[in-house]
Length: 326
Image (cartoon, rainbow, N blue to C red; front, side):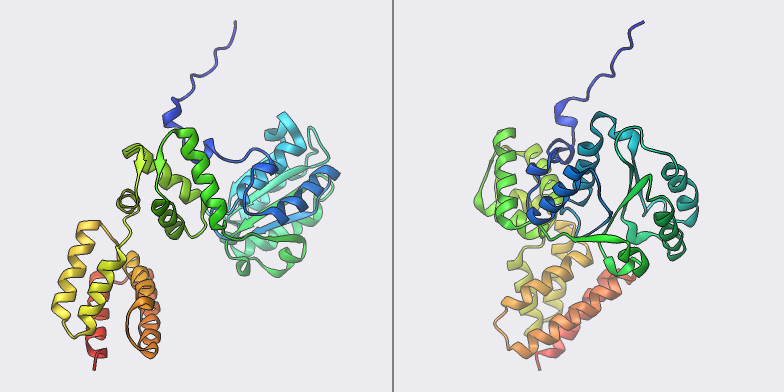
């Protein structure tokens, strides 16, 4: 009996992040030096343990997958174990899943690969267990660890790995990816929209592609206002008006304008305080005041991240600005 293949999802249901994920080293953008060094490991069919450190959306997971596919070909899935440490972060994962996979020889190729994504979320006990596991199974297995904050990885693990520090994707590379996708998906996008997407993504290519897919679902002619409606980004002009009112001592007017903006645009307190910290630099006030305001923004952002009431904290911030005018 012939086994039927499962029907494929319609093209429009496929996430663009998977559809446009690079399949080869040459397709990866923004990390030329790292790519050239990894190519050398693959061509030699040998590599040390690797530690990828860098911001989200900079290509860490993509390169780990490319390494596995280049080393093992069609049998890469049998020789590649991917674990997300933010979901499975305890010591039992290292003792059971990782050890069981690492102790057997590879089906094809010189060794197996275990990829621990978001490894900075592993507990210290799990990292200590991982350190010993990395030593014991070097004959049969190599580890690739990826993290956003390398400072959360214990020193013994760092010393056992070759560290690759990824950087955010440059604007010219982001722009080239956007234009390539626009051409393939047959939509138009203005230069202002491209500039704004790069500004809000901060070099996170995964977020860039997600924003593009969301915008393309609405219109085939993407403008800056389309992107703003998708990302719920506060308008710099509106934020400047609110800050100017508060600095003039008009607390109630600034408060009303801010809350109206948050409710109409669906902005969170963290969105607003980050927009304020950027807008402050362009205000026509003394440098000393700018320094004080940015410092206060940092304090408010910390309180919000700890779970404080966002409306109360932003009210307190505006009241502080109104007092600062004197």
